[in-house]
Amino acid sequence: MRGFSPCKYNNYIPFLSSSIIRCYSSVKGKIGVHINVENEVKCLDDAVSLFNRMVRMNPLPSVTLFCKLYKIMIDMKHYSSVVSLFQEMRKLRIPINDFMLNILINSYCLMHCVDCAFSVLPIYMKTGIPLDVVTFNTLLRGLFAQNKIRDAVELFKKVVRENICEPNQVMYATVMNGLSKRGHTQKTISLLRLMEQGNTKPNIYSYAIVIDALCKDGNLDGAINLLNEMKQKGIPQDRFIYGSLIDGLCKLGQWEKVRTFFSEMVNLNIYPDVYIFTMVIDGLCKEGKVEAAEEVMEHMIKKGVEPNIITYNVIMDGYCLRGQLVRARRIFDIMIDKCIEPDIFSYSILINGYCKKKKLAKAMQLLGEISQRGLKPSTVTYNTILHGLFEVGRIGDAKRVYAEMLYAGPKPDICTHSTVLDGYFRYGLVEEAMSLFNKLERKRENTNIGFYTVVLNGLCKNGKLDEAHSVFEKLSLIGLTPDVRTYTTMITGFCLQGLLDEAKRMLRKMEDNGCPPNNVTYRVIVQGFLRCSKFSEMETFMKEMADRGFSFDASTAELLVNIVRENPSVLDIIPELHSKNKY
DNA sequence: GTCCGTCTAT
Image (cartoon, rainbow, N blue to C red):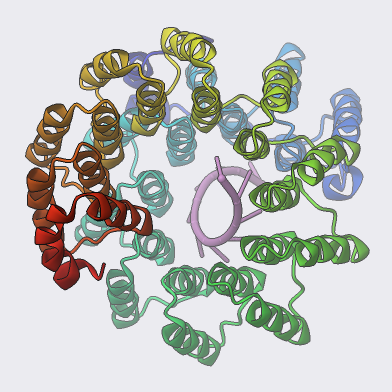
């Protein structure tokens, strides 16, 4: 099952000839067995025992009934059990059909094993069952789920180009959704336009996907234009479309427009559901308007829409953001009173709240409670608590929690690694940091520029400028582009060592590389020149800074005032400061 | 009986 490279997926495609599709012979299940699968199967054990009963029946139940059983198992997320039962069926030589193979492929895809899914294709060939559009849609979704975007797009193009099957609206939607969820909004829009020209016209799903992508990008104008386009074409709207729009508007704080679309929706007899209310509540919470959010919650209850776990989590997070942990905790308890079991999000949100208030004892206590509730801490839970522990300097606890995570917890992600490295560096544990860093590099762990910026910052702050410099030089080799933070980190490092020429060179370099310095960069460089009493050069940067509309923060201003006290000659440049920077 | 779209945490 292993070792299917992208080109090997293509090895299966020659099988996909029309002859195979034509020589399909239908495998009809036998009629006469009445089993209400939905009522009988409540858990995995039920499913397996029903299966065992079914295979012993004479005559055998229909293939449809087996399919129903598998579908219910998939809904319960027992994907690997579907695979086992399927294999059992094959051993018993029980007939299968196209639906069942598609279900099998879907199980593998949902297990994030798209290679195994492709390895089902030979069964189609052997049995003469045709591959259909659903097969490809499922495979495409599986590829996207494992971030194999190029393979997915290649497969899609091949299917279309070689007329392997007629792409339907679901296929377009699958590809569009896969692309849009990974940031390719433009390509998603192109596909919508492509659909308009072809036989498969865009439907409500096509528009929903593009509108959502635009809303997530903050391009509400674009989204609203598409909404109008739908109206012109007579494609009806639904709560998904309005959900995306309202969420986008809430996130931009455009409350007037939220109201407009809310009434527009209701006028179309589309009634807001728990999703839409929760999005509004979340938007209000993120703006600090938790009281208003609670009012919306009361309103939805009056309208007969019950808040769900996410609604409560969002309000808890709202109180946490304002530092009102007692209130957040009260929501948590209310939720339990209402028999809504807290999930791992609830815990992560509360733990984050306590960490922000530096109440690590409370946070640690909650971490302990998670398993008592039969839940498992997520990567985010660990990242949050690790960050909190390092923040208050509880290094020993941080190390213990990290070890626990490595031993029994979820897989650390790039954020975990960055947090731990940053913590080690911050407390001078350079050797431990570097050994972890080297280990991660050896394992070719997923990294990004933020991760490397943490390492560069750590090295600079610990006086290892040479090492930082060589890591920095390496970035382009591993295909990472420094961002404004990366450059600023390096500039800070140079300034700390008094290497002002190097700092200047880096400032020019970032500009040349199309990454203009920001407020922070200028503050750092001006402070660097200030500390070395290089006032005339400092003036150059201050001018540049003011021209770009940046200003000082309090600490730079304070530093400047102290310097002026000692060197009255600096006063010559103060008018510049007064006119442009308010200090 | 199989495949597509809206909400929460670092």
